[in-house]
Length: 603
Image (cartoon, rainbow, N blue to C red):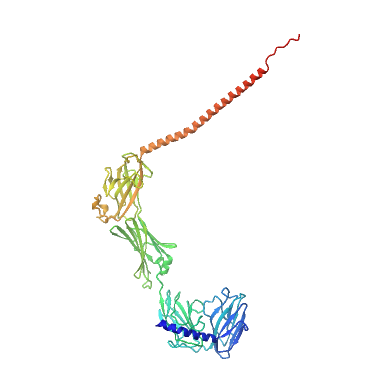
């Protein structure tokens, strides 16, 4: 029904506005640039082109004040205040005191008020060929004549205000300003239950303007008129609302309600890291500032544990210290500590007490890290994943004091090997139990395998397991090799971690047949891999082969050098023989050419 009424009213309002628009005096750039007025009120349009420099004077003999409203203005969009503006002077000429100016970037509906009965404004434009449009109206009034229910200060968390005379028609030449301010750190939401002002395309005649802040000079959120139900929201706890009307066509106005809106609580800027032996909580200073606290207001369950402060506030401590509590549930152990934010040394406080609950949950194949913030029963969670730190090594004796560092580990067949699984944690109540150990000739355990230990039971005759000792699981066995000449042996062990306080945990039961296993009585399970193990005779064979290869490699260059020298000598001898043969042949030919001749007797 409300929508139908509005649809019926809109054509009527448009017709009335069109009639008023036609009654407005139009002042083109030609033939006049500027004018002088003495009317008690006037509304007019101004259209100017480039290079304008026009002055308007408003003056009247009555001892009244002038209110001048530029309800619409359109400059060259690329212009600046230095090249294009409207300058308003408080007096009869441009030499009077400057009240203010209007430019293309003015973020307000400019309204000026003189201190006397005269006022002057100057419009200048730059050289860009473009039509500039302005709508101006002014009226004389007496400041001492107040309109009832027009403007004021509203400071409650919420409230209702209406236009003058609502629901009757508002007065002509109304200018009301409401200043709304709510509690600090809040915003203001403004809604209209009823809204009915004069309608025109640019809201030039009657309008309501809403500003984001304490003044009407800047921060315009919106300007509205006609029939609607607009809503507005400020960015702070201050808002300004202006109602301005001209001399004709008054309607019933508006009824508005404002409420303070508290901002959403800040997102917790915190992080938690859990390892086998430590818990690390990191908080940003900006997050603490948003709650009204700093690092001096923080404490763990044990107040003597203090944070390290730099760019961030960091608590880092062993799992079994600083008042950390431990709770075992099925297959997990949860370590919990709480960072409390509160003022100390005061009798009273008006700040919220905030608790940041940090939990390291050790379960199955990972460590689940949980941190959440409690504030007035609101819980916000963040999670991440880590793991226990477990390793397995061989040792040279049953004292388990000197780990074997070489890899591969070369041993003699049937030599006793000592293996230890180590858990790195500061919680002294944890136990390590070796549930299953499997050997394989390949590191991926994808081919044949051989069980040394299965479900805590020794499957190889040479295996001896040691009783659980705090963070260590130990056993020994005799070295072997796989048939078919597989050179390496790898070990993979399933490791269980239990709470020693639980006398019924899997770690205390030793060898259990598979169908009787209780899978819920251990805290955490992981795998540890070590290897390869190789026999020393394989190493000696490999060393011998390497020695032969190295000897061959060393002899090959000598042989090559000997062959080269022999070949060179043979070639030299061949060349000598050829030369000798040639010389002899040549000599023989010479002798045959000069044989002895008998000398004839001259007698």
